[in-house]
Image 1 (cartoon, rainbow, N blue to C red):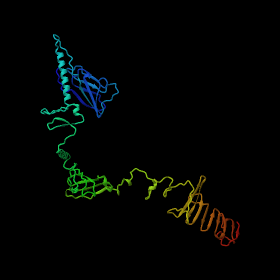
Image 2: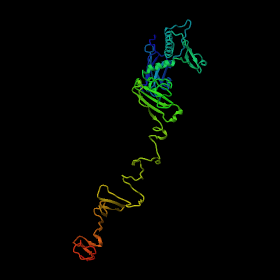
Image 3: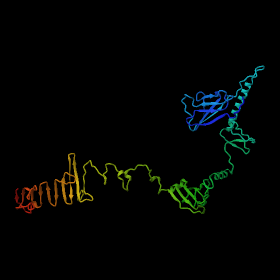
Image 4: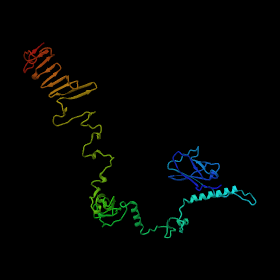
Length: 439
């Protein structure tokens, strides 16, 4: 048959995690002649027919060459070609000649054509491989031989002035190489970008080339002192920033380690002042803590702690507090303890409480002290006010007068003890009154 297919490679096929059938359209005489390779970030891996993949060849390779492979092999534990993987199909037909032509024997055109076709396959395999091999131009006469292993061992591959391959232990660099490299870097990075130059100490940093890194050691226009190395970054000849780093180990003890400044008119040498970013006063690691850290309470000497930072057993001024142990208040002057109801003229009340109930006492209205069972002391058991004590139906008045009454008449309806006769309750208990009145 004639061969109309010149390519001997199918692919590359890109993995998608789904596709498992990959076609090819070149003549293959036996599935063992196929070579299937999968590549990923780790490198290339050659697959094995009938183990990693299956082959389905078209029945008539003369009229319909090619076929397809199924990867992974159906029924195997393999996974489809994944994202980031590539699959390529080619052939690795052995370079053999198996046809025999005997004297006076048969001379069959079909056999001759098959052998010629097989030779074409071998040539195509070699051609596909040669496409991936570097080669010199057709007009080149240079010797590119890699020599022997002994000649190459522990040496660099290079080319001499004639372009021949040579092996050297120390590369020789043309004196103009670095200048040429710098020029090419400038071409790549544009008119204003990054580069390098080693400046002498006499160069004024106010007037540097704004297209370079400035690896200058020191400068009279620097942040101060010796041992600084500079980096200049420019957007334009005028809008420039400089970073200075103290590079000399002997000068780090000065404390200033990093400084920055910028200019909006660098072409005229006009700069804003240097700003020191790291020195013993504003960024000394020995005196700074990480954002996430712990401290001993002994280290806290000033300021106010928020309540959220206090433990539960610390009393708070503006929050309810529960004391589970006896508390003693000691003071050399009076009052020892003051309870004040802020913003009110009534009911500065204290509660004493047990599991059986509560008793309340306190200042109910100015100079009146009361004891009772309600939190507002609306119906107190006892009140004391202006020298008078009232306990239910008992009143002890000033100057020793005593009145027992139940409010049923003007004398109270009870026994009244008084120093003199009285017709009203108001008369009983007058100073020196020792009269007795009976209901």
